Image (cartoon, rainbow, N blue to C red):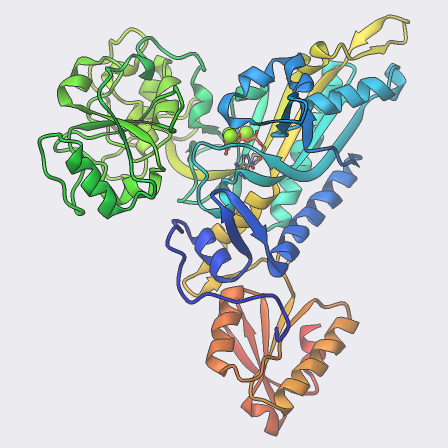
Length: 573
Ligand code: ATP
Ligand code: MG
Ligand code: MG
Ligand code: MG
């Protein structure tokens, strides 16, 4: 550590909303270069590589072959499948010197399909599973929470190619099993939920969600069975009549470049809603429509109704990026059938979720599990309103805890999670676009069928921290940790020499060691750093050395034990 490129921080960064963001920044694992764009410092790179290594092992086990594709691609590939248009604002687009269109790749179905078409032609060539671990680029509307939602992030993406549906099912099942092994090895607590496949355009699809209260996804699970479903999954993708586009127009304001509580209060007061807001205030009776500067798409940000939950300034600050906004008053949303009265949500993704709620079964089902005592379950609250059924017949939400699970076993409750992996049976969308056929045994061409499977490698690192930390710092599971043992030498002379010697002996035995050999740094600072960095085992060479005693600390349990100098290497190796 005397030479390690690392400076830990005592204070949380101002923009850090969730534990993983705070601790990864304070521990010097990552540094922000721009919103949603992060540098991985030496310890962070070790952790990232550890996650990738587990993924590589398990992908290898199912016979997947690793490749590396370019992240800069001409638009033609995406035009062939319609995604140049479908991807919308999330696609990073650029031009070369001749004016030709290029994309920074958000995912790679197109090029993989094209490559397989170039190399393979017979049914005997299949099945094949190809993958890569690489940076992806998505211009997320709201990059958030450090590396959890980046605009550049690391993904493992694999693609299976089979000649028939049974083959695809096998490839899919293999991936599902591999994902379970990967996330178990990474020490994550997770659920597998059925999901809708969104922009990928597939049929069967499941998401792996790491359970944590800070997750963006709300899912329901049953007390009596394995049933779990993403809340989005039971919705149909078509927007109902009267979606957000139909909301009334009002004067457009531009929020401060850097929204803070103070600037937002000024902003709302200046916007002239006939009311005076304070920093402790809530946005009652205000509908906020926001959009990225220059964009044509409005999103509903929050609605406040007196006596119900409200969007407070603090939450708005966390969610709001520089944007153009329209502020509408109560009469506007009263008059509009799309907005549910009684819902107040700080979730900036609110509008997107609203659009999907058209199935009456869902309206009832989710209403069952809504509880006024659960302020975090805003998605649940969303769908319980009278105005969300296709025909508008549900007058009031039936708000009860636990009605039955759709599979008839147990009752439903809600939880939140982070999407760490996603597996899709794509079918033939991409192979149709590129006309990828294999010559069958009967000599006739057969259209190949495809699956695609993602893991957010960088997001997984943050998800692990979300689940594995305490108030002092990270508590890494061993397989992810940047080292197995953190050897701390206090003082200036002998202790540090001994610490270095022990570290060397441990390394010879294949133990990964971080050694604190900094001189002129107090023991207290060293212990605080060790707890912040979160290496599973800490071995302290301190004052007790004169009596031949060292101290062994377990990061997870906090247990401390005195051990003899001679036994130290054997004990921790
Ligand atoms: P999300 O719903 O969080 O936006 P997604 O459904 O758009 O994710 P996929 O297209 O399924 O993402 O990509 C595969 C995996 O890549 C996701 O399961 C997630 O783990 C990861 N991922 C997606 N977007 C990001 C991002 N912006 N930052 C970090 N990881 C991401
Ligand atoms: Mg996304
Ligand atoms: Mg998703
Ligand atoms: Mg997904």
